[in-house]
Image (cartoon, one colour):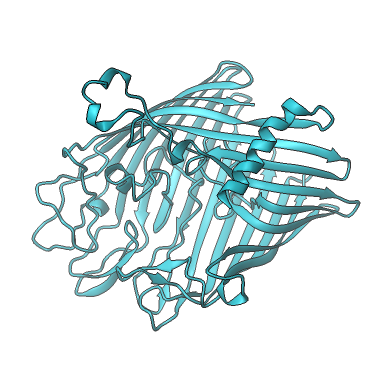
Length: 486
């Protein structure tokens, strides 16, 4: 299958060189950044803890508390116009999360035995991070009543809190659906019924597949500045599909049969220069063998996401964002944590990076990080000019679920593991100050920098050990980036 997708990608690349009869529009993004995170672990290492529940993040070899890495993001999206009734579209990228890290190759193109003699000639080798992947490949069929999207395509709903297509410049991920979506326009209403297959394991029978289906309906009246929507869908995993696992008790096992429903409400209103939006995703149903291999856990998770902005002038915008994503109490009967889409972020440092990947990048991805188990509020200001934009923000967050102590059950949202808590945990995640500055070199090229300083809260000092508490250390991020949008 991998060879098939690579062949398709090669055909799509060389087609413009061999034929001029079929119009092809190439667009996409390519960006490079360099990032420094000071004190990524947020705590000291006078004592190392490996027990369940601890918020201590292990240091890597050498014991350095600072992280430094360079990465790139690539999105190459061809649009092939067949005729007035059909188009073929796709997205080609490399590595994981639409890109990869620069300098992450573990092998070089010269013999390791002669590494000292050929030191100046050693170069990074090609590996999985540089191979082409077809993130999306689908057709669009146009009719008088609807547009039909068939194949591996993206989806977006509301504020993108859960269903997020990754349309922003530096979005690393995209929500992908393998199946069909019908986009039906009825006046001010947009109806999008969909059906897709998530995976199949060992066989092509019904017993081993995982599928999803549902619909969204969105109303938008631009004259009144009003919009609202409802998304309802189901995601079902059949009992013999072993691709999806659960390990909240530290033991990895297939989730087995699941039946999860999403109900997502959305509202938008504009009053002159003031706009606010609200999205409320709710998860329910059965999510399988999360805590053991005998009891199917209920899924009871929800979030509220609020965004508002006021355009004081053509150049100055003030805004307040707030929200809450539920956490899990770690009980054996239900799972309550809501993980928002990794593209949906509120700060430059808090929630944005998976710090476990700093010490173990082969197991984790630094960009697999989610807003979860948190109430947050963000006050921001943005100044826009013809070529420059400057932004500043203050963010505060507290945890929804924390360890209560007294040998009660709790859940570590960092590692995804339930445990027995012996001491109580503080809920303060801290404050963060953010700044960013971007220069638009021209209509396609943007050069930027960002800074973030996290005043770490006592939530991160928890060790689940009554004899020890971590000493917190504030964390800092700085980044330089350049991106081409074409």
